[in-house]
Image (cartoon, rainbow, N blue to C red):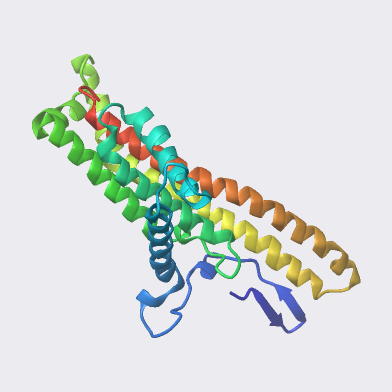
Length: 261
């Protein structure tokens, strides 16, 4: 990923842009061998391997490896499923657990040396995750209440004066069928995209300053220092976004299970 170009007057710094996220195929000549696609497959392999190995020799007194795997599972089970969904939570734990770990690992790719690319900075991946969540919570609501009652309560909120439906019904349609999946996906995408762009600006900017005159060389450590600080900040954002996405998915499922939503 190069942002340094040579101009007629000498070297000039070209700031990172959206073009730096459009990566060419690593091999071959098709979209299925680009870095983001391969990272998605890598994340599935890493997640599967980690939890299979951590559970392979389960014991009453867990090893550190087993404890790490169980801690992640317990966090999703207790804090994201049980507390949000309630007594019916257990059947949704596999989905929420898969969602959380998949997003987390793909986010963390953005700060792992040699990889350094958050998969979720390509909006197509958050779109697919949001779509799957959208289908899950609507399916759950229809299965729980029946299609007629479920959609009736969306279109005509109980306990609201009939005259208010003129305003509320269109808003509810937009909320349940457009706003929820869009905001769910775009929030994740925007945070990963913006965070990675900031890291590129300071790290590549520091590299460029090193190639300048002595005064610029003295400034470059500050650019690298800010880049390092932003890396730790980005780590927190990556974890938080995985949590928020999964939490909202749990909230939508809980709402679909409620008698009135």
